[in-house]
Length: 422
Image (tube, rainbow, N blue to C red; front, side, top):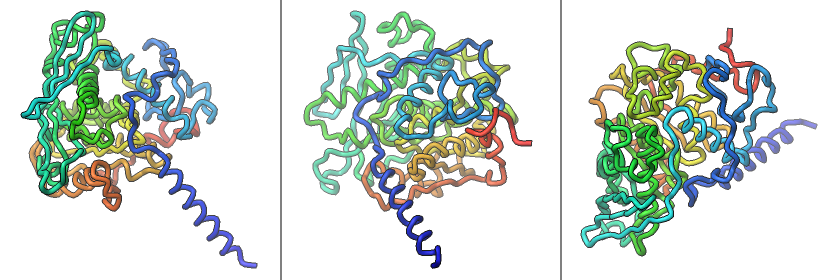
């Protein structure tokens, strides 16, 4: 009897199981942090951290020494364990890099004016902070009365992306006025957020701004009858604001889609890979006010970081992420971004949801100016993950770096001690 029918039956049924499992994995959550209840891992001091030259294994539990535990017992690739592992990565990034992102305060109120100006008031320790954001709705004669999917743009409604990509697909745009939380070049201890949290003076801007985006979402949730679809929210920004969008998406699981545009070092690019390139934004060259000052102790020992920014991106899984790059600007470290994206993509692929992550690294245009060639990729992610168009093609892996051996950075995962292949 031929084995071909049996093999075909097994292959078909395996595919059905994979598709069925992927369909049960949420596209978004209704809480800011699903891992909040997990115990915080004990994190070593810099001198006690092992040096890991290639990219760290995103599936390895915090505290596992890969040199002592090179087998598979110190890691898990099961989706049921991902919330806990994601929470560990979050703790590592807060501990070593950006500082603590405060939890939601007890007192938040919100209102919206007739001119669609959203006002969110936050009170903590007897001090107050107010966020105001203009909401622009799409054409109701074309898209109906709502509620509408929405994008929160860092600095302005659609960030640095063209407004028509969102409005033309029935999405509202919401501006995040980040200076209401912390200035671009913060003066530590003298920013609006510091009044609420005087004990967190050391926090970096990306912790503060992520907190601000989450409080803005809280405000949207609190306004009765607001015409925003809370299950279909996106964030986007470019350059330093691209980092802002990436951190915001990573640290708030109510965000269904993150579009990080040309985020460079401290964003999509991996600190370890950037060290091997030219005049790019390495850990030692990035802005001190955006991060904890303690991060810069790693400037000459980046390999001691127990994570890297492919894991920052992986925190967004299983939700959707699109990274846009521009190789014409050396400072952006686009090759590092490519390697980091390839590494992060392994997480989505492991869970059978590879189409929820994409990257497009394309030159021939100004910084933060989306070229016509990238419109289809952005539009596809907006349609699929904001507008529920399941037919949109989000299998996007575009770059000029196909000859770059990214596998050498991740080949050790789950197999051997952390070393590059000979």
